[in-house]
Image (tube, rainbow, N blue to C red):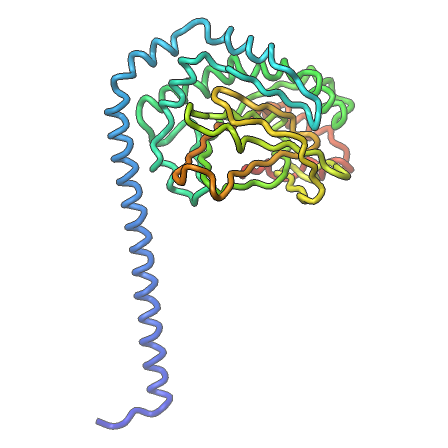
Length: 324
């Protein structure tokens, strides 16, 4: 057999290397697809198992959702809560739901496996769920389609009427605040574990009011709730996306503790808030759940507000109202 010339040998080696790279790429793709299939199988199995466990609670759930006193309980809880002005307008509303409804929401938390599509401490599920036990879909759909839009959100808007109107006057001085209509988002359930940290910030500006329901269970430590800050040299966010603030400028002023059936509501105007869970928090398998939704101008009201912004102020409200 004749000897190969050097350049021919190099070409063949390069071709073999390309073939190896292609095979490695295909194997990587196959492994990723297999991992997704394994995860989806575990999710479907978890839903089926949880469905069987929750079946005996279905009739009791329907009795709870049919109670006529739920709306008055919620409206009273919101009305009796204190509206604080510092470091920004906010209210901490305890026992916001009747105990039996709150117990149903906890029981209807989706299986842990359904959160596993995202990395640890970035895990969340949008409500309504695409995949979840029937009990979970029923109670959380009731929360987002009836409880929040019909009772809770209107009560919160009434509670925050004065600071919201002031906020509208500051940013749109020619717009009568009473002409702005509001709507609530469906929201999302967030799962956080040890080592979670979100630095001081303000939420997306078009979500005028952020609402955080602490889904605390009886055994949960009430520490590691939400931290509140004033900001040195505070200034308005330049854009509609979340406004991240240098921690060196933030001054801690208090903590909203993580208690069952408590909702923390605040106006995205000034100051900052953040949260963290220590790396050594116990237990090692710690699971912490919150439900977050926002109250914002309707699409029509938002369009009208945007159209009345001056050229100078338009950049302050520009960009996608991004989530995170």
